[in-house]
Image: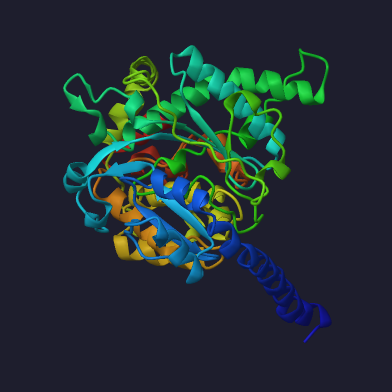
Length: 444
């Protein structure tokens, strides 16, 4: 047995464990002192109203569903080892009535609304600042003057447009029932409308030549669409972050450029409300524009989504998978939630059964560091199975964004990972295409 092998087997894991232990020890030293502050307890408790909450115990989350009954519950959980607090963007009549695997109709009856929560996550906080400013300027241009922004605790920001700002009904459809569809449309619309400005501003960081545009940089800072998913939790305002021991502080939207990491020092925070007191319906124009944009720009895609039928491929071995899916299955560091979204739709589209899909996803998650909560994967599978199958994201910036796009010769002939499987299985022979071949012809 080689020295190198022994080093990888024992030394590297021990170093990783030591680093993790140091982080855990560091944050646990400050949690009781930090959360004992009545002002911190109050701001977290007030924000939790109508929301599902979950404490995090460094690496793992607590039971779900849960909610705070009293302000003192927060410190009570901290004394039991809680290091941070997370909550839903969905608003519920009574969060404790939620059950995993509930039908969409039952969830709609419990849900009383939702906030639009844009998660800007980047490897570089300077990119995140630029994106945050651009999004807020666009929202204001669209008539949404009252938005909240807070530091994520690491290298990004969370922007919130409160439920109060949205119309409660559009053309006879209850807005509260349109989660996560309408928040996803809103996020895509905002991404598309701010992309050119983002490229322009980030280019200035690298070159004084305004004609040289950095087309790659926006991928680092785009809002995470996967955040807009059923029962997804995000870090509550003024909650600590396990990796940085910084607080998720609320920022004045006009002072984003001035923000520095030291401003999130847990013991120097200035308490502010994350959710502003907006005008009733002030985001109506934004929502209508986003819905119109979606209808104009993706009618054929929406039609395909409803007409698509999964193909029945009996051989589900990895040898038939495209390189991007194979790369994901090796385990990834960033974009794990986006990867879950892509894989669920990929597996469903090739006719994979629930049990096989679960086994693959749970096995894949064991290769990740850190791992996703198994409950998150289970919830995403359960939610997807209540819907008609849809294609995974096309071969575009999506897979590059999570660092798994490594095309082979066949990739140049397809536009979607499913097309790859079809061509691989049927050896490029049109005569061997399945009965629903038009689905793939239209996507190829």
